[in-house]
Image (cartoon, rainbow, N blue to C red):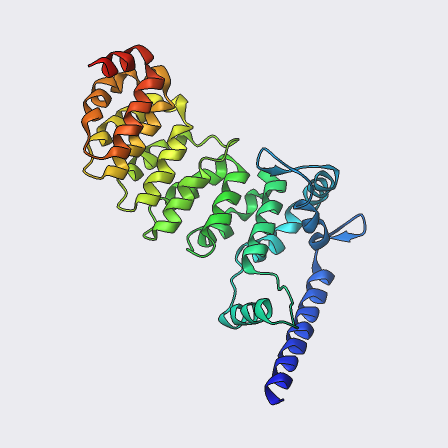
Length: 294
């Protein structure tokens, strides 16, 4: 009986504290057309997803509202972007998710960060004044992913902090910085040298993120292809496989790597041989046919 009473008491306290916090935030947040930022933020993640992005009239209206709020929205967005769940909250969420009666879904820090990131995406370059505040957030392993993309959403001014994050001692931070630099509309060419350095990262995940971004930078083939070829001889099978896959995306520009690729068809690692064979096939079908005929 006492245990049940304590549980109910905790639920009431959480509800009260949450209600007070929500009321305070609502009273301070910017407003557009009679609705606060929090309400508009919910609309950002509604509607059909097209090309990995939300769309539809409701979403578009929310984008317009947040852009109208401009820099006034930044303090609240930054707070959401730096959100972390306390150990107590994690325990409560686990309890509520498993309890047969008190099934209450609490908003997670992941939810808040994802929502805030959508707000930054809506603002785009308008969010430039937030860059100094984003730097410590992007260099934190718990908040690196969303904040890295927020820097990418801002545009060219967001690239230097991402380049700096590529040297962070935490692999997750380096990897997410490399990942964010692959954001389609962003010109990440100033980061090409820093990304090439990450091809030799001691963490395979970071290396894979760097390769993925470099594959999109076909306008930087003069720098990228020699780096890919140089790493084809790595003692790390994962590295060799990823370099072979990346060369596929350079098509004709990748022909300079053909001798090395042909030699690697005898690699002891099956996955590497498969990646190399695929690269040869797509770069030059005639050479691939001759190689098969040997």
